[in-house]
Image (cartoon, rainbow, N blue to C red; front, side, top):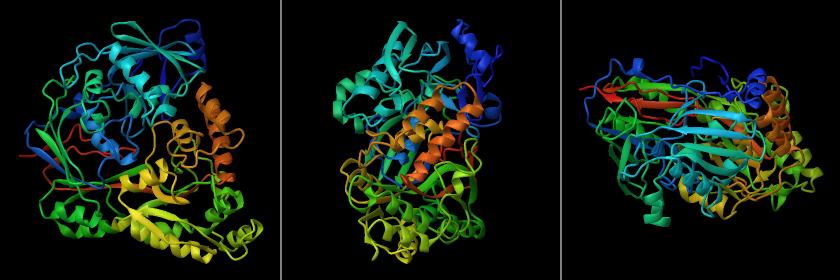
Amino acid sequence: MQNKDKSIVANSNGFTLGRREFLGLIAGTAAVATLAGPSALLASVKDNGGMLRIASPANPSSMDPATGGSGTDHVFLFPVYSTLIEWEYDSLQARPGLASSWEYPDPQTLVLNIREGVTFHDGTTLDAEAVKFNLDRNRSDPRSNIRSDLASVESVEVSSPYQVRVKLKAPDTSLPLVLSDRAGMMVSPSAIRKFGESSDRNPVGAGPMKFVEWNDGDRIVLERNPDYWKDERPLVDGITFRIITDSSTRLRSVMSGQNDLAYHLEGRQKPLMERSGSIEETSGSTVYCYQLYLNHSKGPLSNVKVRQALNYAIDREGLVRASMHGAGEPAYMNLPSSHWAYDAEVAKLYPYDPDKARELLAEAGYPDGIELDMRGYNDQGSVQRQEILQGMLAKAGIRGRFRTGTIPDMSTTYFARGEGDFLVSAWTGRPDPSLTYALLYSENSYFNAGKVKPPEGLMEAILASRSTDDLEERKKAFSTVQRIAMENALVVPLAFRQDIIAHTAKVRNLQTNLLGKPKFENVYLES
């Protein structure tokens, strides 16, 4: 992000304020972010049209960003909905989106200046009233799964036709990046009023692609938005997402020419890609973390020693070798070692030690081990991962059989209905780590299946990470957050995956991003 007066600084952690600059804001200095567009990147690409055919691993849980509950939804949502704030692919730094600039006139007020001339796909105007409608809906609608994303917001006011003032309960430097995710995806208010709860299946945004059809479990079809607000127009006529849950089948669909690309592939498939000669690979590191989501509101997992035993029972390095063919990184917290907020001391808490796991189970009152209700997904990669985990857990006296299903079905069963003791799934990441921890562990968060009150000091540390203006202070706050989360074994992190995409040679300008959620905004097809 460029900023000549340097009142706002975007570092690798996303959006932060320097100490001197923050004091300047308190004194009334306006801070404005300017757009660093991708025009240089797109200078050599061609608008050859054509339909981009993509093999996707999961059916979306919803096409409404407020009501969906699966991290795999984002790939479908990104083309349809523009966000107030965007992020750089390689650093997750905040940059302007529908908000052409933003400023903090004081630590508890965020002012968003909305671009003029933007319309939704239904022709209605995207202005300050539309932004207020979305933010109010996201933080208060009973069906919204992202209310906790905007927990720091006190009120939203329209200060002019294209300006919104967001009043905060406390200083929150993470909010701009929060608005680069679901909470910042703008939906047409007219469409919400028209479709009501059916908005889940009738998406109307202001993104580069317009919704055409959704055949459940089969395909989603989008078409080019001719009135897209960016100068860089979509370079394909549309996108067809084919839902193919099995990763090997997704890969074969590209090799056979049925699809142009497949994403979220497994490390074990890289040798096949290399030998094929007919497809290319694009890959990159991500914050996408496989983990055991624990419901510790009931049964054995309500005992912290049992949860700690689960952490000791997992050979994470062995899991990466066996299930990912080395294309990943063992996970000991919710952040990878390359992340600026990673804490190497916290990473030492749970070395692989099945004997220690058995000892903890005995101390918890289970000398003969425990039986758990395990949940997971039914695609080939997930089943293989579950079988490996089941063998590791058995060595520590932790038994059980997996009940499996599709990602949307099992996610709903576990998170919304509270069924099962744990779910093997992924945390797909968020641009700012404070949002990751708040969403995973807040008492009323969708991802806290048991709706368990977080341990003492955790939420205070998350708030501290959002109120400080200094990167080192933020890092200290996150060290506290991570230590509390892992000492209380609120989760069992497993491994961070690589984003592996297979595609044909005609797919050009494809880029991975640190979130591991592909965007296809600059992709074109070579004629």
